[in-house]
Amino acid sequence: MSELTLLLIRLAFLAVLWFFVIAAVGVIRTDLFGSQTAGAASARKTPKPVKPAAKPKKGEPRQMVVTGGPLQGTTIPLSEATITIGRATESTLVVNDDYASSRHARLFPQDGQWIVEDLGSTNGTYLDRSKVTRPTPVPLGVPIRIGKTVIELRK
Amino acid sequence: MPAKRRVAQLAMLAFAVAIVMFAYANVGLAIDQKIPAGMLGYGLGLGGLMLVAYLVLAKFAPWADPLILPLVTLINGLGLVMIYRLEEAEAFGASASTQLMWTAVGVVMFTVTLIVLRDHRALQRLTYTSGALGLALLVAPLLPFVGKEINGARIWINLGAFSLQPAEFAKLALIVFFAGYLVAKRDVLALAGRRLLFIDLPRARDLGPILIVWGLSLGVLILQKDLGSSLLIFGTFIAMLYVATQRTSWVLIGILLFIGGAILAGMIFEHVHNRFEVFLNPEDPELFQQVGGSEQLMQGLFSLATGKILGTGLGQGHPEMIPLAISDFIFPATGEELGLTGLMALLMLYALLVERGLRTSLAARDPFSKLLAGGLSFILAWQVFIIVGGVTNLIPLTGLVTPFMSQGGSALLANWILIALLVRASDAARQPPPQAIQDEGMTQVFQR
Image (cartoon, rainbow over all chains, first blue to last red; front, side, top):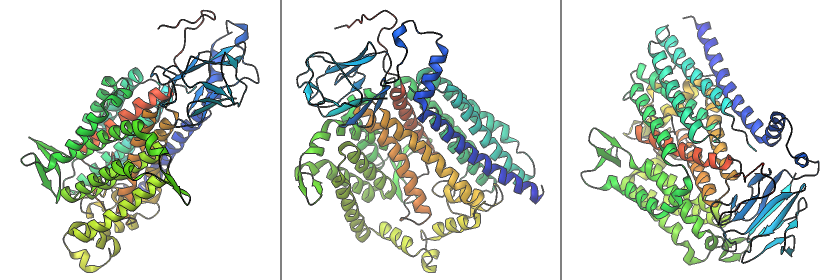
């Protein structure tokens, strides 16, 4: 085996190794911006939504972000499904907080906007500064407080 | 909503196995001038194993992160190639077939963990059980008859034909314990206390847990002479405490306790003192000559220097000159043959793996999963830092395995289980929120 061949193999191996790293970063990149790609893909797959109201409008929130409390940083993508929040393990967002009830509150979409409803919690749910007493629409970027956890809806 | 990305996962997995086969071919071409006879066997063996792991993953954890398995496969495969290469050079104790066998057992443990453990949050109920289990595993080597001392460290237990390092499994049990414990106690650790200057100090009576873990890791250091595990356990606890409470003062207290412990141990114990001496003056000829002196470290550094930027090429260096190149010093051995370029790629693989773990922790929807995933990925990163820092003389050398690369069954098994737990947590975190009954109008059924 000539020196030159071995040199070429050596360089090729290092290149391939780095190519793997770059490919892995590529997978992560599509994953990071995945909310749009995945959404677009599913929109393309389903020919036409059954409900005419399901077409996403421009100002509609896409995700729910936890902005305060122990779960800070968690995001949950919004779909048509109701999001439940509480200490119960079957909740969508499980908060481990002495000030939260096991079924504390839920968020559900209605006529193109998201509604927050308190499910009879002990310490209450707050939308901005006011206590939620009946199902209330949630504007974009307004904090909802549940115990020590703060969440908001974002595009 | 994250997609499942199964195709990307399979492609990356095939790519990883292909790179490993390429490396085998490269070793054979350089040493014997021909493609090694074992290449197909090793390549197909590894490929078959990974296919099984992939299928189990697709069935039992379909939403899991697509990169974790390919990254681990490549690191494990590169480790196999290096051990094969050292075996060819007749390095002491190197056996690629044993390592491949342990990899197979590791993958089996990975799949079994995934199949048996459908919801990792079940582990939260076993908080104190796993704490006790971790302690028992740590103590096991000290017991007479069962325990065994190899190379000056009493960290082995005898199981008939082969011996195990229970500390590797203890660290998993302890992480589960730390996560469960901190979820329950985080409030008191995070909120009580008073402010001094610009740091929130905890109350004196809340120092209990940190002091206990400190005592535990000192105990490991003193009784088992195992510097690495001691540092690993304590560091991981501090990191998880910080993640749980977001309080800097815990990190400061941890570092102070650690420095105190290290100075104390350095003064009292010969073997710790010796490590410090080697760290400070590795080039001292007297230390170089001494048994258990700086020769190993210096040979590792010579290896890295020989490798330069592009390395000598696989099979063309002399990594077998480093004592114990198969276990603690596999990193400089790889560095000699792949050079700085290869080492950086290798470190990137670890970094990406840890990043995927931390991402899982960030995306997790309940505190226990957050702490568990955070702890598991931190311990991987911390372990790589301790051993790579040690062999490059950035920090005093402590005997730890390089995860997935070093030869050794216990570590490989434990790390594959660790990856299974991480994959399980990632599957739960990336799953879309449970869908309520859809396409049935606006009515929703609630069961009470």
